[in-house]
Picture 1 (cartoon, helix red, strand yellow):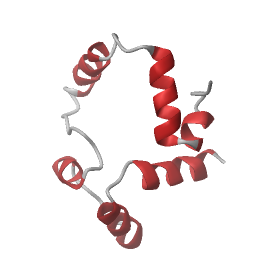
Picture 2 (tube, rainbow, N blue to C red):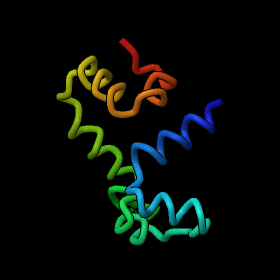
Picture 3 (cartoon, helix red, strand yellow):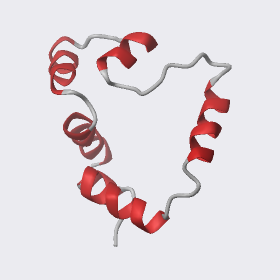
Picture 4 (cartoon, rainbow, N blue to C red):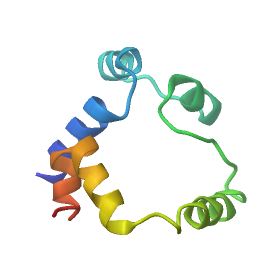
Length: 88
């Protein structure tokens, strides 16, 4: 169940339509910079930069109201957010 919900959520809510079609029909592999250009990820970091970047991103969002953020994720991501526990 998890993989079906995850896959549908990524395709429907995360990837640009053209990228989703290309990735699904060609099984293309993307490098980090290509994934950024295609809209698959927001940033490509080296192995040594991943942890510090993740911590920076987390720190930048600590001011957000967790209940409001959960409600927004539920609206944006539907079933996948509910599956992860973002419910009212």
